[in-house]
Amino acid sequence: MSRLLKWVRAHLVVLAGLLALAYLVLPNLVVLAFSFNKPSGKFNYEWNQFSTDAWTDPCGVADMCGSLSLSLQIAVLATVGATVLGTMVAFALARYRFRGRGGATGLIFLPMAMPEVVMAASLGTLFLNMRIPFGFTTILIAHIMFCLSFVVTAVKARVMSMDPRLEQAAQDLYATPVQTFLKVTLPLAAPGIAAGALLSFALSFDDFIITQFNSGPTTVTFPMFVWGASQRGIPVQVNVIGTAMFLAAVVLTVVGQWVGNRRKASA
Amino acid sequence: MTATTEAAPTQVIPPQERPPRRRLTPYWLLLPGLAWLVVFFVVPMVYQASTSLQTGSLEQGFQLTWHFSTYWDALSEYKWHFVRSFGFSAVATLLCLAIGYPLAYTIAFKASKRWRNVILILVIAPFFTSFLIRTLAWKTILSDSGPVVETLNALHLLSLTDALGLTTGQRLLATPLAVICGLTYNFLPFMILPLYTSLERIDPRLHEAAGDLYARPFTTFRKVTFPISLPGVVAGTLLTFIPASGDYINAQLLGSPSEQMIGNAIQKQFLNVLDYPTAAALSFILMALILGMVTVYMRKAGTEELV
Image 1 (tube, chains in turn cyan, brown):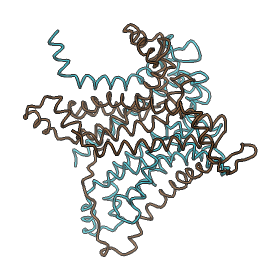
Image 2 (image 1 turned 180 degrees about the horizontal axis):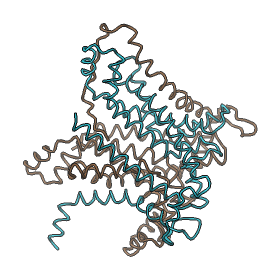
Image 3 (image 1 turned 45 degrees about the vertical axis):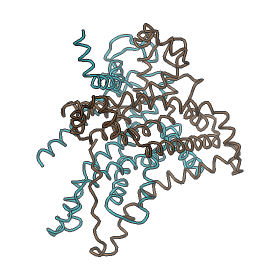
Image 4 (image 1 turned 60 degrees about the horizontal axis):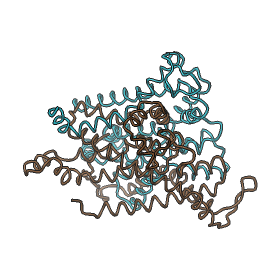
């Protein structure tokens, strides 16, 4: 007993860390388990009976897969928009000293330091006053707006840590500026750009607050669908999608790290 | 997360080596992105400031009447929403720090390289999974006849939290404790990642040095590790507290309708009541209060010599 107690005391930090990890993963496990449930009522909160119905028929719920595909479209477009705009801003901030640089940095930082509901309400008020109809376009505009800062932060961190001498070397070897950019600068910055793009995809795909204020009644993204379902009744398929997303995220990050390690090893 | 060294200086190319038009390059690079932010972030804020001072209705339209009392009315009607928002968020932030620090420490110092990656994936993966679905899962976990409630009841802990006003009727769902639990869960990764980044930079030899000087592990933590990790603590608490205080999802899904947060009020005024001036005034009060608290906090955390 005292040996056990000693062991616990010696590994207290790790044990607390593992408990924290369990806290983080627990809901995902519940979502996984309840994707195999056959609920007795409209809500899937209590275990009733094992069933694989939802997995064999994931799109069996009206409107769910439509909302999923809408979310994917918006996330892809928002990622492209935010990544292009954000990468340009990041290069400007990381590579140049110019008048107004501090102000630009501050403006980039602000959206990340503001509660989402404040941004959501103010943009919604603008669209309302301008009589711009809510829908796909307004959601896309809003998503590019709040993803932009995260892309800038990710790309800027990478560009700052790049050695500018590599580009100078390319120029010394008679590479044109375009060649230098495509063959040296862009490959070096790629991990930062990829991180920024991945983050903005995840943020856009999962965003609820900003979307709710800027989507109007008929454009329903996947988080909006889940929100509506939480009031009307939750189909088991929601848990299937949640589980699939978790697994996809794990696979994606594992592959990403594996590729990263291989690149490091070969470099 | 990619580790970044900010120390690496960016070399500035002397201007005379370049043709003069290069000086405009940064502005051309900035223009589209900053224009987007100005049009869809700054202008809306200004617009909202004017909306908060308007009166009218959706049918008749809104006019700018400099109606400052909207602020006063909103503040007096929703003062408890503000109190709850900041109270719940503060508790959730402290819990995030208490729960997140050991995990960040474990990843940074105790885990082997392979495990470090596994744990980091498990911390980051929730970012990519629908958080609404995971928040709903807490309804199952905290349900009245569930194992959590039964365990806490067996330990008589729910009678204690009942007495403290955190729970009611020895149940967890639809109580402040459930909201705090959801907030803590949702924003925990935002605490862990900055903590991990700042811990990872610490040279392990500092720990050995402290040990060599006969410091007990806790003393090493208190005098060496924690002070160096302070930038991570500051970043983590801000990244947790700010979004948590504006959140309305946890209060809606896990809390009771009578104890909602300020985000719920803004959402209701904007989307249901269609009282845009009040929604605007509430957002501005929320923003101002957060800004004030963050300024005070940053000043404290920045100047206080940390021993």
